[in-house]
Length: 317
Image 1 (cartoon, one colour):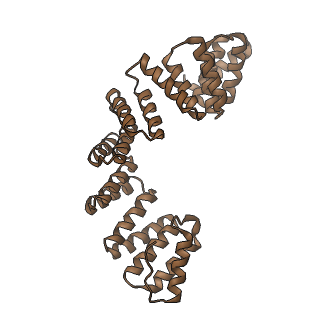
Image 2 (cartoon, rainbow, N blue to C red; image 1 turned 45 degrees about the vertical axis):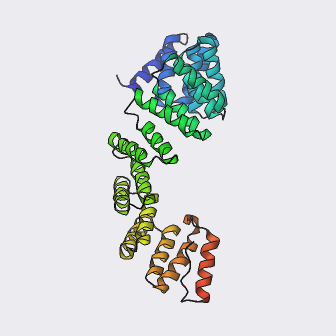
Image 3 (spheres, rainbow, N blue to C red; image 1 turned 30 degrees about the vertical axis):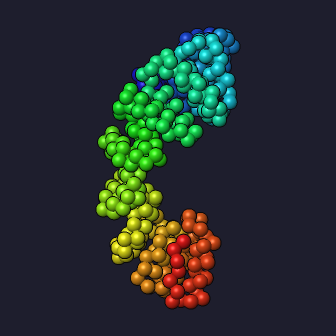
């Protein structure tokens, strides 16, 4: 029997016998699984009036409020569940998440730590504590937590990714690359890891490896516009102007009008002193300013300076 058939059967059971609390409980949980959150809440509220001290009902109400994006109500429900049931690690973990969703990071940290006091193998709790340390700017503490999360669950590629990010922040680029490579080993289509490796290589003047990683990022995610932008910048910076122009043209064909790429095209044409196309692409960049992340005022100034002296090669922004 599939879930929809179960749903229909449980619904009929309750219609015939509204006091069948077990069937109503099963239906509420099934509704949560199926995404019928409003229906789930209706049955959970019915049940909580019958069983006002049932911790599991409050826990499921918390899940329901969370899915409905009412995080304050979710927090209250989880608090009641923990009050009734005590130190259940699942209840404490969801309570911590609700505190975090409500911007109460210190309370979230306290409850995540309660989880690992009960279960020191809980990789999710270590990961969540690590994320809170990232928000505090405490990279060393974050690294310890992400390493512990990985120790408990090596396949958690998000933990590897966050660990790599923190290594990068403190200048441990070799370790960062190692962790990014573990990410793509575990999740081969995770293009953002390739992009971040490329950034490190570019910052270290390793052009060949940076380009290689960017091509992999774009291969895995053809819509990765940040990777396309960095690759275009590298082609221009390394004077591979023909390749830059071909690549920018392909990007514009794929994505349509993009202010950033018109600006990059302008810089490429400036390099080869094709001032007609340089000016044209600066104009286009400003015409599509909604997709121009470069300073608009500076681009306008550059265009105005060029028009005052068409032979003038404007400085980079």
